Length: 94
Image 1 (cartoon, helix red, strand yellow):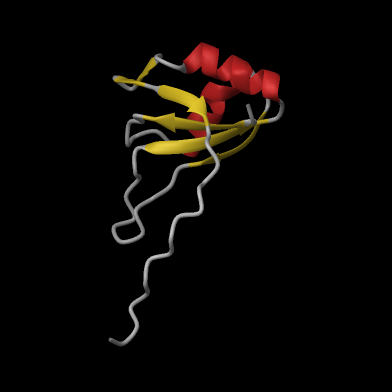
Image 2 (image 1 turned 60 degrees about the vertical axis):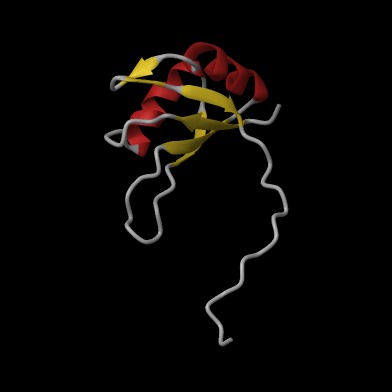
C-alpha cells in the first residue's frame, strides 16, 4: 500500500483544511487535494490525501473509512495508480 489515499463521498462543504485536520488524527498529512470540475470549478466530491508513512495511511483507512462527516459516510481507500488510458483527441480541425 502506498501513502496516498482516495477519499470519496465527500460533502461539498468540506475544505482541504477540514480534511487535513480530520486525517491528522491518524498521523502526519503531507498533502490534500480536492479536484474541481474544470468547466464549472465545482468540487467533484472526492479528494486525495497523502500521509507521511504507510503505517499512518493504514491507520487513516482503519479510523476513517465508513465514518460519517457532514452527513455523508466517507469512503477511504489506498489510491490506485492512474492507468495509461488512451488520450482523448483535442479540439483540432477535422
